[in-house]
Image 1 (cartoon, rainbow, N blue to C red):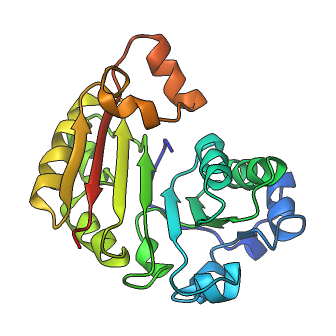
Image 2: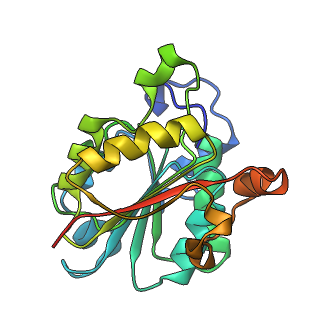
Length: 232
């Protein structure tokens, strides 16, 4: 999910000489992935209009799918749940939906949108579980204001989720995790799991290791992990 910037998405129709990923979004995968001009119209209606399921059907969100390894794994492992992924770049967006479809999943959709404002896409209480894995740590102090995890952001995510749902967070950056954990503990969420070394913890048994995560694991670098719950 790296390289998060303040986003001013250029409408697709204004992009000259669209590359193969843009063409794929508009043509080959137009039923499975949606540009920023289309996705907000489904707000409050993802279940009924996109997935064609009942109102109580679980609907999960991954914010920043990268190359889509976890996204495809999650969709395939939980066919009983619907999954939406957000990516701002065309290449990882198409990689994510292509990978999930090739693996046989039909319960996943991708959206080109800004990770900073998912509430433009979903109504309050519309979502179930949310996954945020390895967001840009913005390591320099003057950049910390650009980090995705902020108090207001958590408050707004909380409102989007149904009671009993969880938010899962992973990072390779110690300082980011320290700051995030403080914010988690001051948020409306309840912290139900956390560790400063995921792969040496009891929580590792349920962890899916992506290619990005394996880079740090192979170097012996710890992965920081937290799981928050919206209380019943």
